[in-house]
Image 1 (spheres, rainbow, N blue to C red):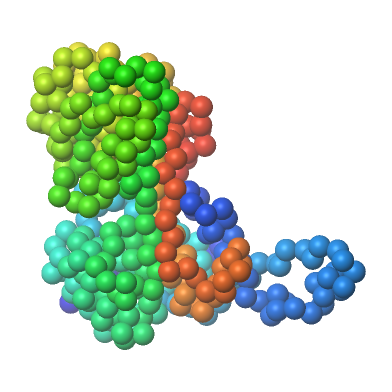
Image 2: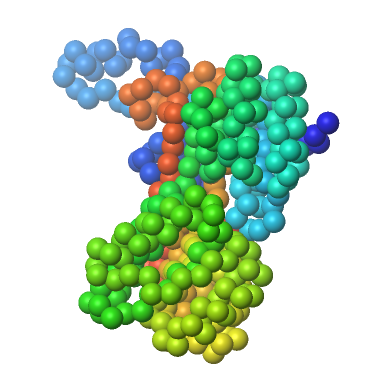
Length: 361
């Protein structure tokens, strides 16, 4: 049997902050109380032509306890570690969530077994960040067919019927944000040399990030002059990838590094090479890179957020779906099928706004 850990703590405190593409989409998950279905002061206000007050919140009030199963890959780098911890922390803010956490794993067969255990246990909802979305599609579909809503996080399944809700970061948007920032800095220099340090090239998310970057640069007449791929780890960023890039390009004006975890290794390679003629834009939004930005004496000028709070959003949404609640910020009374998070650029001007929710590499 796949091992799980139960997390349940009393009390509802302030919620985990998430950067959401739709204004207020998750920041105020309110509604669905009887007082909100017409009548009373609202009708009187409407009859008098006055604006009715916003409905009082009901979704954060304690409801029927729901059991949520959670499974994600191994926390082998900072971003993934933050994914799992933010899910645990968010569940702990509600005393009507019984969170069952499976041990993080990069073994697809084991993760399938974990989901099967959740199905056998009859949990009320499953929040799943699959190691491989395609490989987990069948078991997720089985859960849905058993009447257990699945909240798919970050890595999409290959069939829409495998999940009730999908929570995604914006990989293409990350690339665009990084490219647009570099265009703002170098757009008047058509001969500027731009380099890219990607993640794992065969992953769709890496391909999306690179495509967004290329598209944004093209709009200001720039292109990617030098490109290497690492593996989203500190070691991968330092050994080989960055060193090869620096050797191939004796002069660089800007670098975009897809991932701040591998960015720790990237910065080590840059320091070892004694290079500082360029500026670097990071990716994901780690606290390490934000402190580099704050210092004012680093090659790191910016980083693009890829929220590590996605699973926390998944926990909130799983609770709403399991308790048959909706989101009062929408006219639609049901929880949406998809939520895609925004990819803002963090610079010295706004770093204080994001540092508190950043993850440690």
